[in-house]
Image 1 (cartoon, rainbow, N blue to C red):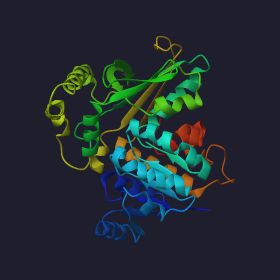
Image 2: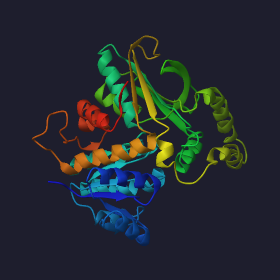
Image 3: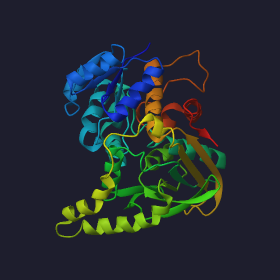
Image 4: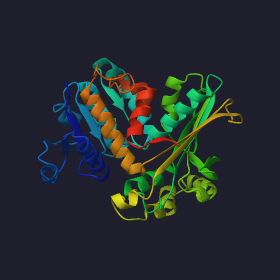
Length: 378
């Protein structure tokens, strides 16, 4: 039986990409949001979709529209502000949940508050199911499986090619700005530790060239140990701007020092405001096509990563395009339910609770699905 898919935030940039991806799959979601006129116009342009006017900040308003087994996708951020009431509504209703968050702190809170309730109601809750951070989780899991039981650590680097600065959305620039003053979690010696963002710089080989990347947060540190409990260390890096990695490390130190001064908020605002420079919205299809994504994972035998055992590289579509396609793929699988006629590699049953993509679907199913979307090893 196919359940309803409800897309909250469909009139926004990321929501529009998810909607397009769903429609290409032949899936007609119910679009939802606060603006009834904008929703009605979007629904009409998209072939007469059903639409709901709901307030993401009010879980009771949303919950009355959800049924057990429905799939709720939300792209409404910042998720620290708007995500938790939406997740609560899904968990209480037994509706599956997907979001486009890149906020690791939000994901940690989501697990603390809603994991057990989701297990009770049968809801599969998949936060950050986009470019942040499915490619890194997939690459790391493949590298760890290839490395075998001797693997104790994995380092993950996110890279891109093409005119990446021109291809960053306003939402991403805001997240990058906020992230400079927030700690980045990494796993070390079997526990989570918070470190200053960009305090570490690591070099990876990408397409035969050595490129630098700086420390960032990633849900890999939360979800990989569920599948690989012997892991001592998990560290995530961003290499979008390799030449700026070390200067950004110094910049991050300066910004974080400023937060501790009198009038620190005002000083930090001035220091980080240049990161917001750019047009509203996000890159169009032509620009996205010029900026593919590349993710690398290196599995090692020691927590310091000194003895590499396996390395996996994945390349795929632009980060924004990939996010839309991944959310549509997962929502389609969850809505369709278990199809006994499918092979083990493509079955769509999933583990309930607040879980990562490997735990939810299994590594082979995730690898197969990502390959269909163009994200594959190189």
